[in-house]
Structures are given as structure tokens and as C-alpha cells.
Image (cartoon, rainbow, N blue to C red; front, side):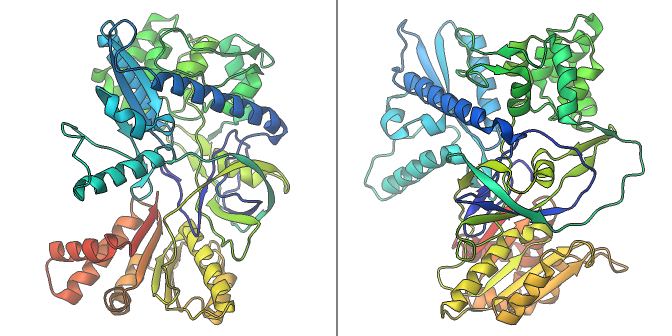
Length: 560
């Protein structure tokens, strides 16, 4: 899953993980998580779960207290300085990083005359506070197909209602002068859910080129030595006076081993600000100079060649600059990227599995340009986790749902693990059919490389065809013929029926999967189908798709 992660079936999953196990099998894992879970917040070792939950509770309480303290401050501080609020809404931490960078720059250049607060939107009461502000900077991301981030959902909902009230003439416009408006998100409680089962996969041939497998557990000792500490060293962190980052990465006392396991993502690529921090701890002048150069605006090309293009990890960067020996506080405070949640689409229906949630995920095992084998933290953890392992999880609501009426036609496009939410859809339709509901047509376009290796849920789909929950199944196998065959090719060949379901029968179109290629190609095919049937220009067909499908909610995408 990418920056945005997965999507949802009847409800949506949202997992986040820590740690890394190492095995060389790539495939698909289908697992069932007990209780009310969706998505998996997968951490490394559940043997430390109780300690982590206590830490998380303390962290949340401290975060709430710190933000509430900041919110009570007026637009001028005690010394009469102007106060600037930098509010962030983030799903994977990128917007938070930008917000802190903005806050740092403001403080650097205007710190004597300005007080700066960087605040999580989830902790900010816009209804009570926004009208009192003099200057607010919003740094907000979206996920999926433009959905609000979890921690900004309440703000987005409030802002939408305010806009409606202004448009209806019920309120006076109050946001004139806003240069850019960005919004969206919501936070969810974390709980432990036991794994019940997982399987359904295939193995890929090992890469031919020389590779280096880095095990996260194995590298902990190496990092500890670089920090000049034992893995059993017990530490606690606090932020320096006046820090933009109001909270440390973790609270309480814990061992260095636990801190590395739960909080530091040393296999992620470092950003430029991290390189600048590393340069201050380099005893070798040449290493310090090179790090500063890559971190500078002029070093954009150097950074791209050394970090971005080869996807070089923080661990690899430390190995490339052996004289860099950061302090413990700097390592966790401004160098090591924080572990972020991993999100997955729900592949089950609560009607079929009321006490469990299924996810369908491809186990990540990629060879990086540097020769390093990158194994996905979450999927590798899940692949290696014994049945019964308890996994911290949280639920994220989804707008990706079946139509209001089960009689409305649906078209589903989901190659690979993009099939996940549609498995939930079909289970839901099966339950509705058993309860006596009549069902409208349901067409599925599924794709994979080989019918004998990665045809997910083949038997289940066949049963749904027999049962009537699925009317038509189009399977595209991209590596079995002389030419590559994809889902969009099947859509184009069946364009007349697709057009009839969408334009004449007011059906719904759902798409789930890769945003970089598949989603764009499927969208182009949809526009081409409309253009050919309407005998109009491409621009007119695009407008029709937007106004008749997207704006009405009949064209929903869960892409990453």
C-alpha cells in the first residue's frame, strides 16, 4: 500500500505496524481478525503489547493535555508577541512533517516577535477557536480518492457545514482572505485483535541479482553500537524548552530495544532535514560537508541520486557515513522516522462474519536498486505471525459502500488485492439474498498475472456466480497470452453493457487497486466508452462522467 493505503468494503480497515520478520516467500495472506477490528496496526512483538498500550495511553493523554494547553492561549502570548497556529491533518505523517518544518522556519525567522504552535487538527476545536485566531496555517493531506485524513475528519465535517450555512445565507462569510484552503480526517481507538488464520498464496522465483537482506531485529545491535549504548539501556525523552514538536516520540521509561522496535522506522528513506541533523554529528569533515550538501536546496540532484531514486534507507545512510554518531535524543527526536500505520481494505462483510474482519494483502518483498531486499514490515509480520497472535488494530470508517438499494446494478473493477472490498460486497449480497432481497446485476472485472498462481478466491467467486450474487465475471490474465490482457481491455470489449448499466440503469461503478497505472487506464476506458456512445468529444465525455457518476457518488474509487 502506498502513502494512502487501502480502502474499504462495508467498513474500512486501517492497520499500522512495527518491526520486521525475514522470510523469502512472496505471496498473499488472507487473515481473519477477531472482534471489531478493521485494518491492522501490526507491531513487532506482541509479547510487549501491554507495555505498548500503557505507553500509548500515556502518550495520548499527554498529547491531549499539551494541545489543550496550547489552545487556551490567546492570539497574543504573555509577552505580547503574535501567535501563529500551524494545524496539520495527516494519515502517514507527511503533512505533520511539513507542518513542523513550517513551524520551525517561522520560529527561526520570526521567533523574537512571534510565538508558534504546531497542533494536531484532531485536538483543535475550530468552532470554538478559529474565529479568535489572527494567523492560522493549515497543512492537510488526503488519502485514497481525496478522502479526509483520520485526524482531520471532524474539522472537515465542521467546515463543510459552515460552507453550506454561508451558501444558504444563514451565516456571513468569515474566511475571506484565505489564500489556500486544504482540509480533511479522524482518529480511532486502538485495540488488540487475535489472528485466527492466514493462507492463500504463491511463491515467486528468487531474484537473480546479488541482494542484501536486512533484518530489522538484526540491525538493532548495529544501531545501538552507533549510538554508543546497550540495547538494555533504559531511557526517557523530553522535548527541549521552546521546541516546535510539543511531544517526544514516546513517553515513559523503556529500553532502547523497545524504542527501536516500536517507534523507529530505520528502513525508511531519510528526508533532507534528517541529513542536515546527521551532518552535525559527523566527526569527518568530508562526510559532514556531503550530508549538508544533499540537505541544501542546491543538492536536490545529489539527494535524488543517493537517496530518492535508489530508495536508500536510514540504516544504509548511517553505514555510508561511519563517522556519524548521533545522541539518543537526536536519534529519536529528529533523525529516525516514526513508524506509521499501514492501511488495508476490508475483504469481508459483517453480515457474513459479525465477529471477525478479513484483509487480503500481498506480502511485500522488493529488491531495491542498492541490492537491498525490502520486506514489508506489516505484511511480513502477518505472514510470520502464529495463529492466535494478538495484533493492535483500529477501525477507519469508509465511504466505499454498496448502493442504498440492493437492486441497483454494480460494476466492480479490482485486479490483484484490489479484489478485497468486492469480496466483502459479494458476501453482503449473499446475506441479503438469503434474507429474501432481490438483487440487481453485479459485474466484476478481476485481473492477475497467472490463473494458476494468483487467481485469488477463485472458488468463492465461482460459488457467487452460481448463487446469483455475481452476474458476470471477467478475468484478465496479463501473462498468459502473446499480449498483455488487463481489466480495462475487458471493459472496452464489454462497453455496450457497461454503458447500459451506468447510463440507462443508474448503476454504480467501483474501482479498487493501483492508482499509478490501473486506475488511470480504467478511467480513460470509461471516458472512451462514454465518448463512443454519446458521439461527443473527449472533454464532453469527461464532463459527463464527472457530473453523472462522480458528483452523484455512483463512481467510487479506493486506490493507493
